[in-house]
Length: 289
Image (cartoon, rainbow, N blue to C red; front, side, top):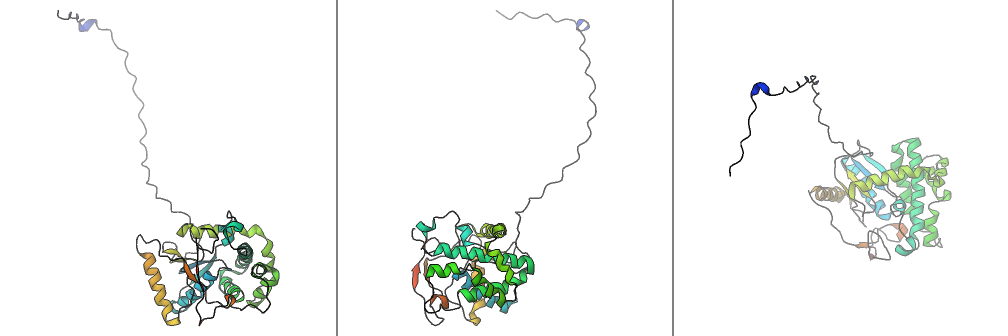
């Protein structure tokens, strides 16, 4: 069977449809300007050639800093000496389980000295940092221990005391009252900020020092970890090699965990001798891998 055909109603009998109300004209939308991507905030100094992040109790940071001063003198670089705290980096670490027994006292002393440095910079400007860090290093590492000195742990703890800090401040012509900052943890926020700033440049599985060359866009890296100070005539050559390697696109790491004890008087290693070689794990002499 075929379908029944529907009868069509004559056009003149179709019921009229309500008329559609006219739509109010829409105001044209102003074109939106494209938003530029926001770069991460960088708080470091951007008018220095080198930002050098140091903890005053790290022997490798001290050795590297002496090399950087050699390069600075020959290349006429400017250096902003900034803070990174080994104690804050290891804030969640079980020192008793992970480190030799004297490490916690040493790292805590470093944080206390950084508080003094932070106050010195706040009151006397960043130009006070170069001589102050140099004086810290001279007293901590470039001075041989006196006969019958305190044990290693006591000696490291002593570095965070007023008795230790005040003669250093006097050496560089800074007020002794700056030593009040040793116990003032209100400076820790600034030290933490710079520590985080340094680690944001390299990643977190590093130690000290961290170097940022030509900030803010230039290359940054941990180290180099060196145990011997280069000769004056080879210091710049080593610098160019390190920076050239770090600048290579995609480069991340060149490493060996065997380290010589640095040629520092405090460690009993003279410039004409080679320090004992040790195997470091995770960037330190950790007791557990």
